[in-house]
Structure formats: structure tokens, C-alpha cells
Length: 501
Image (cartoon, rainbow, N blue to C red):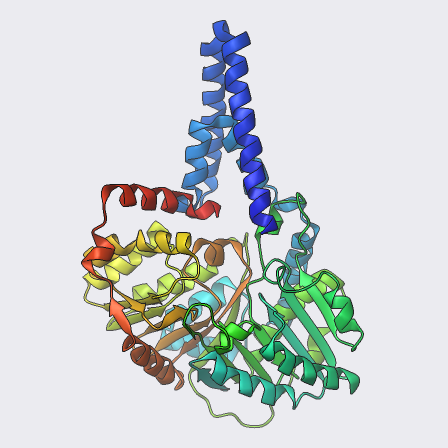
């Protein structure tokens, strides 16, 4: 809420200055209007050229370009405050520093690299070549198709903790779910287990007091609200920690779409059935998630001098089962890993591509990739909510219905409620389960994490969940696609502004 107020205030100030400038020009400098107009036009074009030169995703930068060209002062203010002031953030500098520092802890064994190269596993090669995250084949993966299935397993594993518990979530909300977890954490902390909680300050701002970390400290639980909201501090306030993970002793880890709040386990869900998912990993790939967590934790605390103590050596044999790569997404990285992993899966699909996402607000690269896949005969199906949580965001989603539908992409609405699961699945071979929505915030602005799987047996359960969920869906109708003139205009405006919100 504070971040939205901040952005609105910046826009208001920019509009006020733009109007004041226009009025003053008319009143006091009318005879020089031509020269002044040329000057601001040249400045606007130079700024736009600079944006175009560095743009990785033009559709993401287009709203800012249009604003700068039409309203030079307002656009320039937004450009300065919302577009290029990231370097001022001490926390972001610390995160980048720890990412570099922790590279030495993420070393891929040469045998697996040779195996990937010999089998020409291009999607895996992209992740390993463009990031430091390692791939491993000795993992046992379990997929949970609802939060209420995921939660008991999480509690069971938390109760086994002996050394440490790391939890990182966008939302932490008091209620039945958190109470059950907190009871275990209190007991474990009292017995000397290193318990660390990190939640996003904005994601939980309406649920938790600013003093909540101190309340948890009384029980021996370490707690950090990530990127604490400070009005007018800088644009980095716009980059939230949307990751969701629990790591226990380095032996077991959980991720997926489920936050720590009752609606995620279908207690008092405000939008019908809350369709979410979770995933559990036992095996070497847990280390990627551990390093991800400790990168953000130590960027805030500088607590751990050597993180190898948190790595569990899986001496017990785990049956080889395909490949698993937990990976992280962070804003301002050169490569847009979140989107690129999805696009690579779209481009490599031959038989089918199934997607579940709460939001469908995508750029032209993603739109074109989906349309090309459908045109070459891939069965592309996307499940979105039937009961949306945000009406304006849902209107933005609907703005993509016609172009996708007209090119053969099938879109379905989950009529029982709200889909919060984030799933990509193709050809019974590849799948991603994690936190990355198909929207601008997840793909460009937030800290996220995904679990990429290839040739893993649990992919069959991901597919089974999709097929079962599809039975509770209805395909979009002509009424959803063929809308009136004014609705078309409204959708176009919202789509244009999507990257700004």
C-alpha cells in the first residue's frame, strides 16, 4: 500500500510540475515557446534513445517512452525516480556483493557437465551457462497439488529439525497455519536449533506489526523483514522478495506457490477454492536454495563467515531420477532468467505445453513464443483463475485473450476459485514449479525462485494435477474475447501501463 501511495505521489508531483511548466510558459515565455518546445523535444528524444539502446524488453519500457515523449517533465521524473536509481540502494549493493562472494560455493561437477553436453540438454545448459546454479540427478521430489496437502508434510519435517531451519516467504500472516508452524519453531529454537525467518515487509505489512521480529526474538527466533518499507527512500522499494522456501538441516527443502497464510491451505479463502501447489526436495539440489536464502540473509546481517557448515553431505544413496535445478531470479540481472527459462520451454515444446498462472500479463516476446508454439502444432493450454483476486489485474490478463486465442492458444478459467499455482509443463519431459508468475513483477522486478525438472518421475504427478484441474475449468468464450469498443480501449490502456504497476 505504501509503495502504491509513493508511486501515485510521484506521478501527482510530476503532473503538477508539468502543468505548472505549461502555464508559466504560456504566461511569461510565450514569445520563446518554439525554442523551449524544441529544447524539451530534443531532451526527450535523447532520453528515449538512451532507454532504447539499453532495453532488453522493449514492451516493458514502452510506457515510460510514451510518457517521456508526450509529457517530458513527468516522464523524466518517473525515469529518474522509477527507472534508474537502483544504484543508491545499499541493500541491493550488498545482495550483488554476496552473489559474487557465494559463486565459490556453487561448483558444478565435471561429470554432470559432460553428461548434459553429450545428451544435448539445451534448456539445462542455458540455466547452468547463464547462472551459477548447479544441476544434480540424485534427488527425490514430491509434488503437492494443494496447500492443505503441503502443510502437514511441512510440519512433519520441521519437527525433525536438529541443526537449522531457514524460512523465506513473501507473506507471513497470523492464523491457523502460522500458529502450527510457530509452535514447532519455538520448541526447536529453545533446543538450540538455528531458526531464521525472512518475510517481505510489503507482502506482510497489513498482517504483522513492525515490532514482530522483536516478538519472535523473545523465543530465540531470528527474523528479518526483507527490504523494509521506508517511504521515499528509493525505487528499490519496488523490488520485493516473492520467494517461498523452507530449508531444514540441508536435508529437505520445500518451495512452490504457498505462502504462510490460511487462505493458502483453504481456510477462509476469499476467492473460492485456493488452487496452489508445493514441492519437496530431498537431495543435492537443496544446496542451491540454501545459498539463495543465505545470500539475502547475509546481505542484511553479514552473519555467516563460511556457509559450508549448512551443506548436508548426502552419503546415503538416492536413486538417480532425471535432473533438478532450483534457481533464483533477481531484479537487474543481465539475463532475465525467469522469463527466459519459460520461453526456452515454450520454444522446445513439441507435443504439448501446459501452464497454470494466477496472472497473464506478458510482453511481446512471450506472446510471440506462445503463438508460434501453437502454430507449429503444440497443444498450448493455460489455466487462469475463474475468480480473480484483483479486478484491474484480471482486466489486463483478459487483454491478451484475443491475440492468444486467435493464434491457437487455449485459455481456461478455473471455475471453482483462484489459481495461485505457477506451473510450466511440456511433453512429459520438462517442468518448472515455483514462485514465478507470468507478469511483469515476477519476471522483471521481484526476487523469485523456480524448480526446473527434466526427465524426473514426479513430472507425471504435475501433469496429473493439471489434467484434473482442467476438468474444473471452462474455456474462454466469445463474450470474453469479443468485447465492445470502450472495453477494448480500457484494456489497451491498462496493458500499456502494466509495467508501471
